[in-house]
Image 1 (spheres, rainbow, N blue to C red):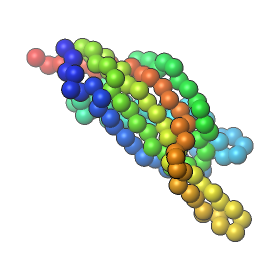
Image 2 (image 1 turned 30 degrees about the vertical axis):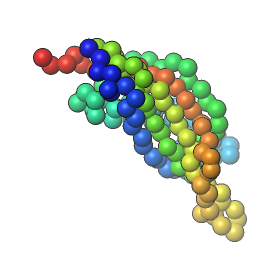
Image 3 (image 1 turned 90 degrees about the vertical axis):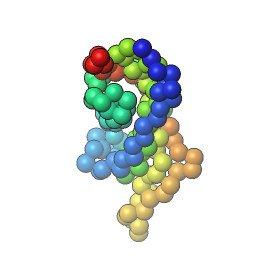
Length: 133
């Protein structure tokens, strides 16, 4: 049975993208990196709400809308949008909130992006074990 007070719960992580994750020219990171981050916030959501890590069942409507690059500072959110008996549907987003801005005379330079870039969005469904009675 659904507890409507839980719908709307948000879990947020922040992550720096190390240069070791760059796979393509321009220090681009592959899209699978964002999906892995969605798995991390979904796991926390399941732990917070259900006391279990849960298991991912599916993704739908995955959109890659801006590049993720090594040196980026990301904010990843999961928002619970629907709750079934064992399923949890969540909306996910990766926002680039900071980006490396290195130049030859300032190799460690970086900047805060205002507003942040929406890099990846998705909807996903996870399942959790039946509740103990």
